[in-house]
Image (tube, rainbow over the protein chains, first blue to last red):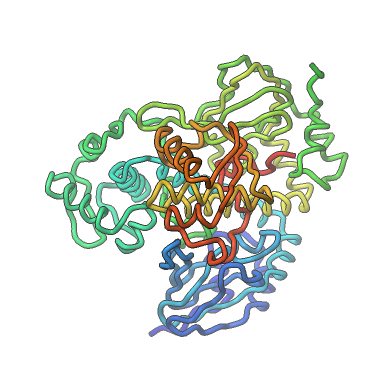
Length: 254
Length: 254
């Protein structure tokens, strides 16, 4: 196994910090504290004071809340190179809006909030990048809200698949989360999700294995759930990624 | 009828620009162009290049998208003193993510995007305020997503009512939108919403007139829809306002 990346290289590779002065980045990296988390260990809980954001050097972290039934509702799955909770640094009061837990043994770096705020004050271009990233995430969240207010589970699923198709530029799409998480994200039970996918397969509209799917006929998929065909849809929404990754992670994957 | 406010006084009164240097604000106000819109007139359409944000001096503007059935789905209703599309100024490419239309004869001021970006470059504290406002809106949107992924219409309605209660600090709550809009925002039909409210009234859990409601028994409301009682709920979420106003308007009402 390769040794975990350094905080500086992680910051350097994060799109959020692209173009930021190397000296400033080094200062930020120096403020970072290494933190190992065992599988199952909490990094922070919803409502905790948000004193640091995290860089995932190696491992896997889930961001979640509890459902009314007390089940974990995963909003985001993070892996090597991802940033975690950087948007929370700008909240007032700065508290974490979700709980983060390592699901595998992980190595992270905690970067103090104050170090980020100081860097912002010293680097207006960084703030502009952050504003742009936050605005994009906000509209991604809005697109999700738009989709979730479709009354019909089949419409929500097809709207989601079509957005992935737009985002991944083709009919071969890769679902970024497992099906239990996807069902929760689309506001349906795993059984409903499974039944819908099964039906689309039987109708010859969908194929593929595991989390890799092929949309065989997007227009017919729309017709099946009484959505307008693609050609008739209004202008595509900005930042069409409907996954919940939009909500906490500004920078996304590299 | 009082004459519409000036762009400078509108900017001055917007929380988003609180603490911004008076000279900078005056420069921004000077760049504003007055624009009258008749009832029914479009200000901009989803997908249009976002060259300006708006100040509503007087009137009423709806932000909406089209549903798959071609109906207007209202995300936000704006009135005197509200800002409109300021988050879109930071998108790249800068395009409006929704359509805006005057629903009454309105007087607005259009402030060019470039003027705002120049002000940002000159005023790091403004950017920090904007970052904080965007982060807050993002988490409000996330809370909405959290609620919308509740499978059950009754749970979504009760979660919404309880959030308003938290936000408005009491059992008397005022619904900020009309019931047709609320139903769309909660992902249910107006009939379902009406039926649920009627049932809560009959059960003695809810009272009030029009858009002013009184929650008579929050715990029983939760029990009715199989949500955990308030005392058992996890720490309250940040910026609990679940209305869709979070998504386009950073500053909110004064």
